[in-house]
Image 1 (cartoon, helix red, strand yellow):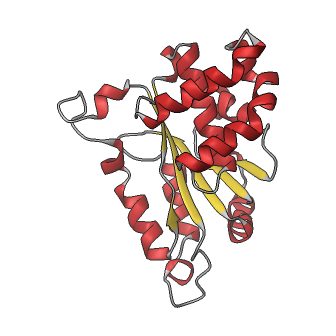
Image 2 (cartoon, one colour):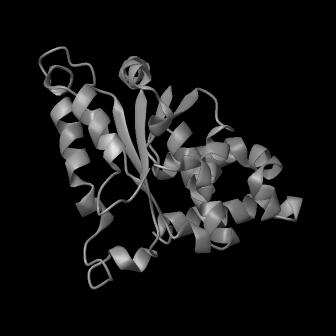
Length: 221
């Protein structure tokens, strides 16, 4: 599966969250990360060629005024034209996956009924889901990363795992695929970031399964 990660961020170099995600993405093969704001005008147009050859397209950005930064919307307006997104024409995007990775500065509870923002992130991202449906794309559940700066080690480990699964799993979140994913990657994960969280090598797999249990119960961010 070839994955294209398009990052829209006005100051990506200063973002610890984006640095964390970029380092994590570098551990997976067959994906490419493109910083939209760093592309020249010609490069922004040529980015469409990468979209055409990708199987999964990830739009990754911080939440700006309840939506995406202006650079992402400008690129969508320029390139995601009716010719490309209308099923029944050239169907360029039909059958491709669309996923979102959205970072915010608020804790999870802010985006719940009765929370600070009084609206869920899924509701705020509805325009992207509508765009995907219009293009005949497959919507992949979004990864929301809330208040990364204040996440503890366990929370960052969960963020790391969920992001890697988005880059490598055909159906992220599917229990059977998650079990297979952990079985295949437990050793590799022990050699990477997660090794700092799991100090006893013999207990690695058991603790990984504990993280899976937390994810299945919906305790992830």
